Structure formats: structure tokens, C-alpha cells
Amino acid sequence: MSTFYIILLLFGAAAVIVFYISNIIAVDHLMMEINTLQKQNQRLTSEQEILRAEINRLSSLERVNRIAAEELGLVNPKEPPVWMSVDPEKIREVEETLQKK
Image 1: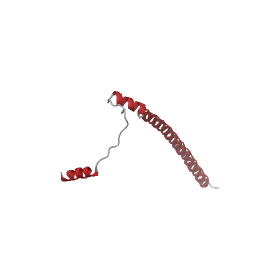
Image 2 (image 1 turned 30 degrees about the vertical axis):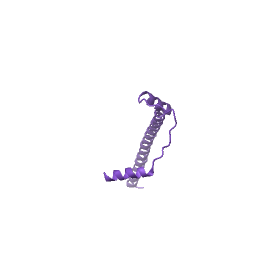
Image 3 (image 1 turned 180 degrees about the vertical axis):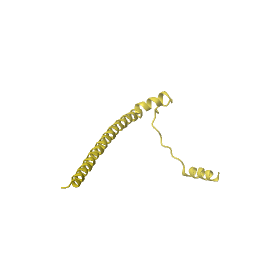
Image 4 (image 1 turned 90 degrees about the vertical axis):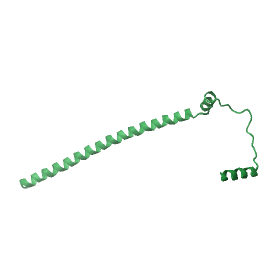
């Protein structure tokens, strides 16, 4: 074998080694990025769970009733609601009056 082929073989081997090492570095970089994104995903999932628990706490019936009574002065009625019947003729008259305006 001539010196030229040996040098060519060494350059080829060096190119393959450089390509292999750059591939390993790229894979390591991607793995670190995946790890970072997984941690961020876990953090966001935890924050969502905390926010859902906060929503459930703030929208609980006991809390809403307490705020309605204390801050707005609302109370539950002592009697159940009663159904009212409305004359269809009166509804038609009101509709006609509204259409005229």
C-alpha cells in the first residue's frame, strides 16, 4: 500500500470518528432538552392540579352560600317557588306592543 492510501484511510477514519462523536453530542443535547421539557411538563401539570383544587374550593356551595348571605344579604326562601300561569292573549298583546315600538 502506498502512503497516499494510508493517509486517505486515516482521513476517512478521522471523518467517521468526528461524525460519530458529533452524533453522540447531538443525542446528548437532545436528551438534556427532553429532560428539561419533561420537568417543565411535570411542573405545569402540578400547577394545573393546584389550580383545579383552588377552583373547586372557591366554587364550593358552602362558600358561595356564605358569601351570598354575608356580602350580598341574600337568603334562601322560606317557601318553595310557585308556578305562575300567564294568559297567552296577554303575551300576544305585549309582543304586538313591542313590535310597534
